[in-house]
Length: 83
Length: 130
Image (cartoon, each protein chain N blue to C red):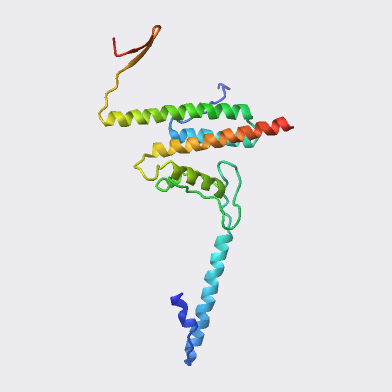
């Protein structure tokens, strides 16, 4: 039997994110986390929320019939379109 | 209440008084039962601050605004934090528009992030003071 520690993965949903934040609250309250970690978790959560909001917004526009042009990050900069 | 108006009415009928007394005793029993229920603690703790019921009136809510149709997924919040969430939820106008559960969860996550940022700052200030 391996003695590897089990890593708890966060559910990749908005409610999963809420659970992860609640967990951080618990850790902070019980002294198992510190202010720097809590701040880092909050900053990371903001990025996830903003990305998710953008995805929802894009889906709304897509539903309304807006077509998206793919963007590619190259060494020269951002190129619009496939070519 | 109009239903209990008969208690004030005077009657010469002997059985009437007996019935009145019985109803009054039943009424007292109901009132005691209600008081017991009101005073009973929910036994729940707030998911944000970890505190329990404030008093008989301000208790921990297990179903908060926006989660009425998903009671099993609703967070438990004390009166103070539930009021804060209600205000944020109403301000966001999510309740007036046809929003998805995902959007409500995201807005709640943003609300939690604000609390977490504030809590981490408070903790840092406390640490610096020590």
